[in-house]
Length: 210
Image (cartoon, rainbow, N blue to C red; front, side, top):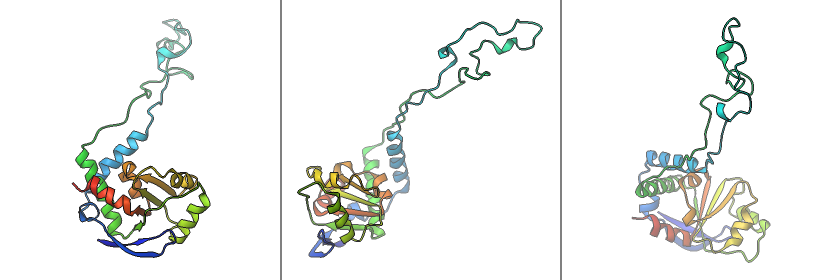
């Protein structure tokens, strides 16, 4: 698939880049996408939720009533889950939700997501660029020139060396800037428009075309 390269003003530079079929033209595997997104979301969970069990509640363990005659002795102490402020039965405990996936499966999921974007014509390719200063207005102007102001965008740079671009965009709600190393299936699918630099296309081909 061949696509025209744009500059920051949104105009064609006259150059074209070939999106490799092995990365942007495969038959998408929906199950691989599902597993990779599931892992990504699971890894975001902190797993710090905690409720107090019966043995962690402060209070006396004395029986509230005598054994016979009242009908309430079997409730036990004030720590009973039956009472307000008592311990919780089978409550949540801190745990790690993350799980591992095969590298080849993760790679298949990513090329599947990228292929979906290519199939829907939701990919723009920019010539390699950098910002001299950190300025959100500059990034907003770039999005306006590319006609993606109202879209949720994901900009993928070849590397993380140009930190000014990231810092200029981080206050914008619908915008995310990452490097090729940070690319994940969830962000690709969640973006309305995928914007790649020419360097990122080359790096993606080297990383995923196997």
